Length: 80
Image (cartoon, rainbow, N blue to C red; front, side, top):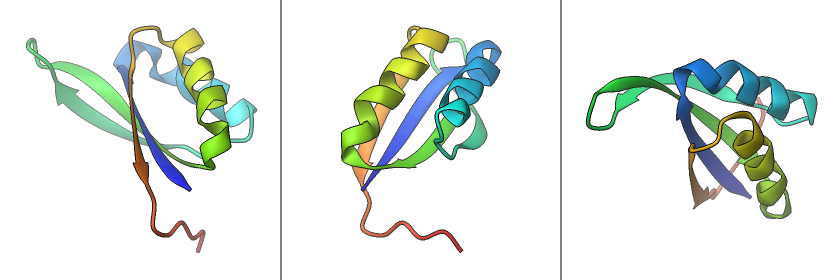
């Protein structure tokens, strides 16, 4: 299991979330700020099976080109 962290421009966040949710991904959305100009971004957290990372990456790329993707191993993912 992986944690996919997408950092997208705030203006493209809705399209990214909609694309991911439409394909069955569960998304947590956080407001974030960063970069040289300190512009507002949105950080999307997605717990995802490793074999689904490329599909999620393509969905976000299509909705918000230029976004950043970080992936991390998850020791545990549990829906409570």
